[in-house]
Image (tube, helix red, strand yellow):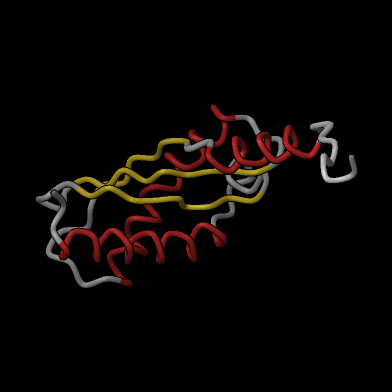
Amino acid sequence: MVSYHIERINDDIRHVLSEKLRDVKDPRVQQGMLSVMRVETTGDLRYAKVFISMLGDYDEKQLLKGLRSASGWLRRELGSSLTLRYTPELVFELDNSIRHGAHINEIIKNLDIHDDDNQ
């Protein structure tokens, strides 16, 4: 079970990274609409796994390379924005939940449902 303190830190990190990702100049990161879905920080605050979701056409490998390239700057910005004993090292992973949700929405839209009330 994750403690309340770690959950609060995860939310703070997610909020700061959501703001700072807009300022990243790397074109590999600015390919589409980028969202930080959730953050999972280890108990010792040394590592933070950041789950990123992007809507639109993008190259996953290039996106992850761009995020890894910007991770040092993002970590420094995170350290200056939050007061933590340790600024966690950022590990980025893709979360396809937005894309998956959009796909399900398209499937539902395309269903041929007949209204049975008009019998």
